[in-house]
Image 1 (cartoon, rainbow, N blue to C red):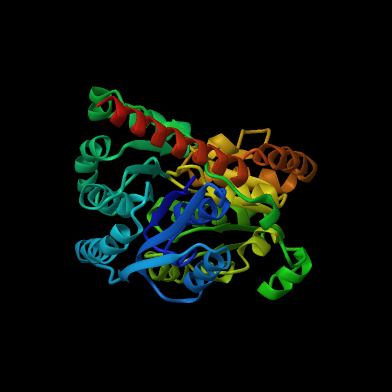
Image 2: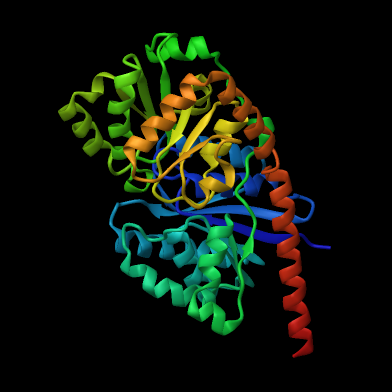
Amino acid sequence: MSRIRVVQLVCGLAIGEHNGGAETFAVRLAGALDPMRFEVSVCSLWSYGGTAERCAERELRERGIPVYFGGPHREKLRTDLIVGFVGISPIIRALRPDILNTHAEYADLVGALLRRTTRTRLLVRTAHNVVEWPFAPHWERYTRRLYPLACDYEVAVSRAIVAILDARPMARALGKRARFIPNAIHPHMIAARRTRRDMRAALGIPASAPLFGTVGRLSDQKGLPHLFAAMELVREQLPDARLVVAGHGERAEAYRALLAGRGQDAYITLLGPRPDAIDIVASLDVFVSSSLWEGLPTVIMEAMLVGTPVVATDIAGSRDLVIDGRTGRLAPPGDSAALARALVEHYRERERARCMAAAARQHVESFTIPRVAAEYGALYEALLRRTDRDRAED
């Protein structure tokens, strides 16, 4: 029996620099699908160049997974979409996938076009966020109508996203319902390599200083100005407190200027993209997520897995992981004062925080990539069987 041809379509592989959780998940899913049942490839709309992209490409190729790029990224949305579509179309025609699985807005849109212009049998869209098209909100009006028509099936990484997808008028008219399959981590591949003391020494932070931190794209979604304001309040009670932020994004320069203008760059450090981000997370007293919206944030899972206490905003997705008072602390999104209180309390109540961190690790261990990959594999096979049965009946 021939293997099922599966293509995971992403925007890019510059993970931690230009791309984030959706692309991380797609790479992990590609590597975890059973190679005896699936012939997997990864296609990226754009090539960014740089270390992160080379590392992701090398990781995939070492696993025997081919990687293809549509064209260079130029940071102009319409031009980039055309470049990506034109460049990736002949590759998809040559691969002739049974399943094209798309991840994140731009890949989803291009995938919908590819479904109609190539020999792709089925299009599966994985919706990774409760807010799509944050940089081009007018596109959302069109895709709400397009995806139920163009996609053969939609998967959501949180139950909140399932509810949003199922509420679309077009989806209801067509009788289409999304399926919840969560984001996932690979516990055996996530471990800190450096000790807390060594990591703090490398960052130039005293071992005794209260250290808070986060990892993610420097974008409006992450609510970082609210976190910066919270740190002013934190330092009123913990004068030596520090904050480190690992990641890159379109707001990087604006945030550097903001911190310098307030004099906060003395205790808040923007580290840029870091290949050792998990070591940084493991060195923190408290990991904090100040996001205004999320899907199911992988970085919170990783913080929980390495045993770092977590404070997050009370938003859909994050609250699936952080159960307030049990696996971490929650604060209202955009409320700097409440976030500051949660950070100080979680730092000071060390024993309680450790108990929550232990419960969080146990909770997050159910979100494993082998389990999730098995669900995707079963879904792919079921969809193809249904398609073959429908064709036979016709």
